[in-house]
Image 1: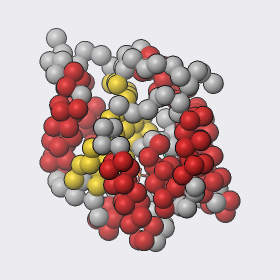
Image 2: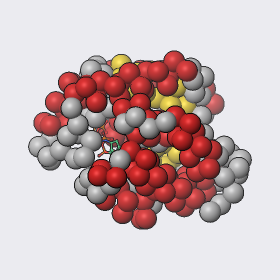
Image 3: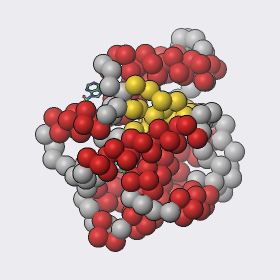
Length: 224
Ligand code: Z5A
């Protein structure tokens, strides 16, 4: 494991929210927008996953392999995946001064295994300290929408339900409340985006937030 206290030179942005909130769509759009405006690399990645070992864990957890063992076992597996992802992809990219945009990160563990799954926040804090250390997002965009809308979008893809999409609506309502609570507790890091709007409007809201919160990133000018 690399030193978890490695200072990061790049910019670390995460997108969070419930199912079908449009995170993947907006990760791509934000990356394209930043690449058109900056002269340094922009890396997109996701959790769980983002490195070969973490992708293996992703496949097992989303298939429900750890569900019988409860939220603590799932949190440990997400943390093992995160440790590898941080070591192999995120920290090296940040040290090189790159911008990393990640689809889900620590707030998903807090919301899914913590608030919705019932895992003690003190346990999650301890895991975060060990696994994440100081590699915290500079900005977290919380894509907020009614869970019914997000689940309908996810269902419309016709790919079947994974372990979390199959949970009851009340679980997804707790997730939404958890993400909003995280944003309220950490307003310096988090910004809530209305994700029920059309994709172009969501993209514009994200661009405005980047301009406000990370002006150096937004204002480097077009690629020469
Ligand atoms: N999980 C966890 O429990 N603990 C953890 O620590 C971590 C994760 C890191 C990952 O699954 C699961 O792991 C996740 C939490 C759990 N739960 N689930 N399920 P995933 O990565 O496969 O699922 P997801 O993150 O929820 O992704 P998603 O369902 O693909 O949603 P999305 O990325 O937010 O949305 P999208 O793919 O961009 O859009 C969904 C559809 O809606 C698609 O057809 C789009 O074309 C459409 N879309 C997008 N934006 C819009 C707008 N604005 N209007 C209308 N339609 C739209």
